[in-house]
Image (cartoon, rainbow, N blue to C red; front, side, top):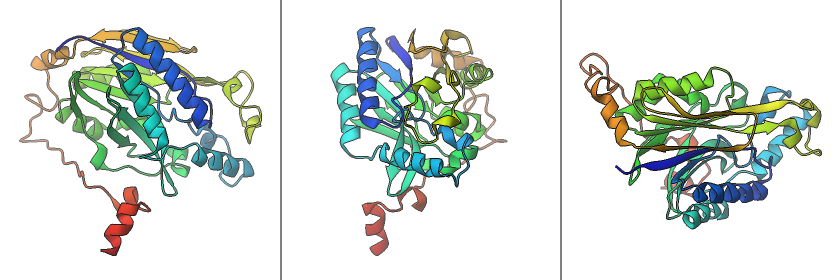
Length: 315
């Protein structure tokens, strides 16, 4: 397998402004391509912003209602012009573009990770299985149908979103599919997050790319509803984007409290070589004792309100 240049884009979206955020994605993708990057990861919920107010405002406040309305308006609908634009960005610069987005299906928003191939096609979409805490006020629940690994020309690619990475069986589902490059977009910027990425790399014997936003209160619009919820000078997200090699060694980052690209050159065959001593779902797994079952059936909750679900209900 040839070497692959990978990168995490650590930046702030233009909060709740989809068009401006997509323009920023294009600019960062061009910068990455100029450095020879073949796979570029953006943070969780980058298009067009993480709903940080769910940890600050009361759900029944007028500010929460106004913020949620803007959140819905800035969400991505698939298929549609926003996905077309992201695909065109990937095609124009010739790289794998993987990006967190708020995806709207009917009246439900999902925390989704979208994978665009270098030819511009939407190769995969994963919806976060379990929103954390206050996130359940704004995001629906994904299902096992998107818990898959892509077999591509640059290696076997997979990933989970934020605290999904603390779900051992979800990680095991990707390990069992031979993931070689594991993507972990997040909003978590705690001191323990880099250690989490290292643990996954050592446990899964894979490269791990973590991408988080770098965002301050000053990055929020002055006219944002509930703007007083955020104090001046406050860091909403400090970044800590990091790239880790199989075995747990940090090879790039962490980048802290600034925007930028975290870049590394990897050889995905190192993932296979590292499994000689330990393979979590292979020779070290004891399938006679321990087994994993993943239900990959799409659920009604995921398709509710779509033309397909209406048609299938009528028939």
